[in-house]
Image (cartoon, rainbow, N blue to C red; front, side, top):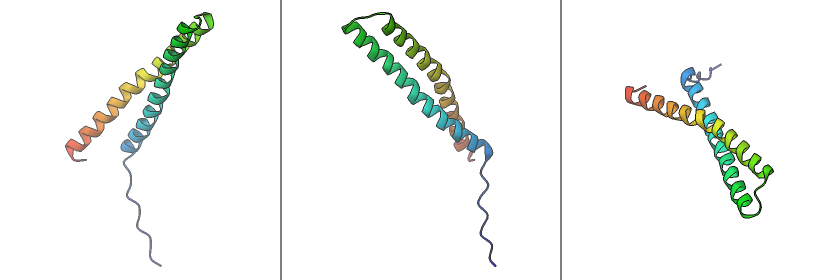
Length: 91
């Protein structure tokens, strides 16, 4: 009975790096979505009537967006730099 070839073992560091890259991409998208929500709410509130609820939505959206974007941008650059270094070293 022939045995099937074993799949090549994946590097756990690269697998983890790819997982971090996926999460940072998602955090970037959601973070920018919250920033866009804050800008749109501000513009609509400025045009119609700017009240406490509009201000709260703008502030909360900006805070959530910044909390998501700050680490995801840094981690995204770290993943790209690590991948580039691996390519340069021939790994």
